[in-house]
Image (cartoon, rainbow, N blue to C red):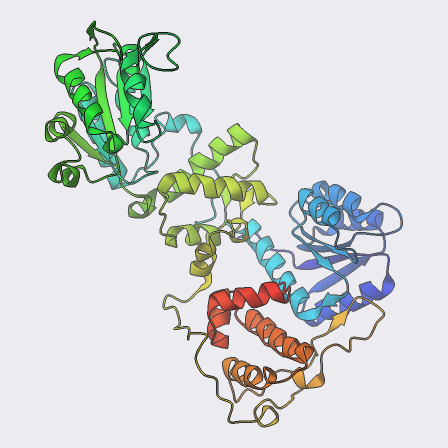
Length: 524
């Protein structure tokens, strides 16, 4: 494994800020080097190649954003945290656009700062990780010419079936959940058939209104209905000599099913509004995620059509059933995203892969591509990290850091014990360092001394219960906010930022915890 440099570079023209940060970071065992200007910082970054850089936004000489742009080439593997006293929209956008890991507002909250350092150094370790799950590109996209990716048993069985049916003229029913690649299988059958020189057309039966589906498939004559200003050939005519793929055929109405059956049996179609019969030579492939057997039983799908379509059946497996193919799928998709959208990500960290392995994938391969596209846009380098995976899917982040057994989380409406007094159960204690703000000339007086951590003889949940029970009776809303905010912050720190664990520590639901985090603007 590549050795990781643990140096931290501080770039700020304020000597007091440099001194404060140096003292805090050095106490945690980090080797700290300081620079008093952007120009000096760029030079030292080139020489030291630090794991983490703290960079002030407003300095004499070149600005923090300008310095950040130079640091991307001077020390491309360093994580950069921008420091600013002005949390403007422009600052946030510019910092992230130019590759900052994060930005932090002055004055600093010590707990938040240390947690941010921990996350940044972990990200740095992930970038340098050479573990078997942290891989770069495996194959070239040319190796996936068929577009079907997967060397596991389930996908190999699909490919074998494709090889068996491709040369025939048999109709094929392709089944499987949405997003499993049914159209890819249909295209692969066409490409290896005797009709490969002919057209392949895919029609999504669920996406076309019932009033238009017949016209779309069989065509229409001019004036046959309102809006039919010209004659139009349907998909059966257009695919003469080729392959027509009817996706989501389970959504087709019975009247249209009857005409489809005639087209298969007789090779004949009739345009809407026409009297003339046309002969067509089309191979039909169909797909659905619905239970057609059940639909046949309840008479919502024609039995004779079902047997005509289901001559050969190919089942596309759900993504969760073929996790052995995940590395190849990620590889292929990152290459394709790079070519299509110009994204830079070409690898993925061990933590991110493990999180993806444990996800349930309701949207299957299509959802995987969406997640990788999102992550490749926001990632800071060429490797996707766990933090880059979309926040809209918190279960990905939780599964990667939670225990296999999820703790029981009590309901938020449970009665709280109010029999003990706050002074009896929540006695003040002193730690090596008090939680406070630094980075400004003002002394922090906003947090009362009696909010120091509780004795180790009671749990964080017990402390929260007691604090909540007593402070909710008080008329001083500020004190209630201070107590609750402090306990929530501690729970997030102790759980490493994992909301499921933090809510379990406090004995509240995760939904309630989220509301409190938003209400108190807690950053962690």
